[in-house]
Image (cartoon, rainbow, N blue to C red; front, side, top):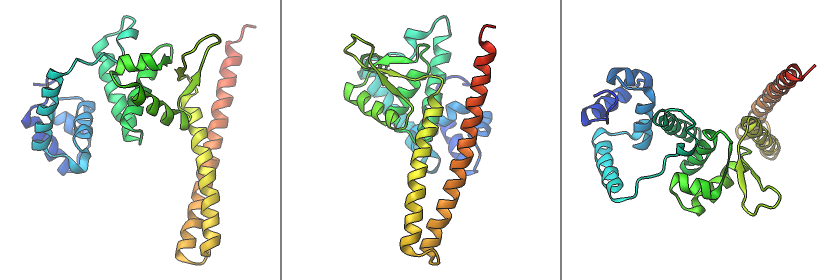
Length: 243
């Protein structure tokens, strides 16, 4: 039934919808379920190209069996519900995790990022993350390294504190874009070097030259976006300042 657990028939319809080339929203409409439910189901079971109804049904049985044997996981958002509907927030957290995972983040890094994003303080320790996600400290450490390398999360240690805190704030995507720009600059330089080494008149060299031009155009566009964003923030802060 809508809102309950997916059935074998639901999974058959999802597989048929994917075969027809339908999007998650349309498949969800056919099932009477949110698109996020369909997206999580497909992502958890091989993605759009590999999804099979029978295999997904069996995998679900196996996961249910393991959950009955294991300790129930702690809610990602339980400590910060602050009067919100915990189930609704948890469902959003699961949806957002799948979304950023589809953008290329490893699963554990996506879970850590979501955990920080839905926390009002925007800051948690490794111990906090271990408790909330029910994973090992090593898993948290590896995930934070990935996020820090991409400029998404920063590390802080308050004076007198021994434990590091992992922080996410309003500038998270700005820092991530800056990290992407730095990578873009490296790729532009490498592409130009490749065009020079291979010869710009050869097919391979021409590809590198075209790549450099595209990446340069993208970097210029991103830089303009960031400049406009900084101007908007400055105007907002000026407007909020007491006269």
